[in-house]
Length: 87
Image (cartoon, rainbow, N blue to C red; front, side, top):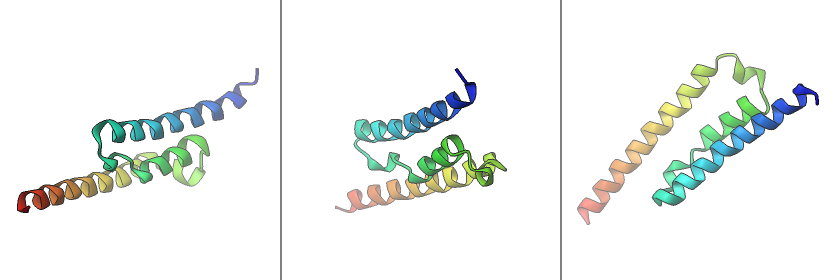
């Protein structure tokens, strides 16, 4: 079997598992904030499609959306806590 044909299958599988794990985490914790579309897009672009533009500097491509997602998640959690505290 040609090894080059296996690589995309593994890549798609890894991206799919990452996306499904976000959904499962969201369901278990009852919080849809765990589904991060930025991370899903990166997984598809870098692992499945292997877009050269995304692969030039993968660390920066991963850190920037991850950090902004974390900041957004934290802000949403704080705002929810303030809203619950006021009511």
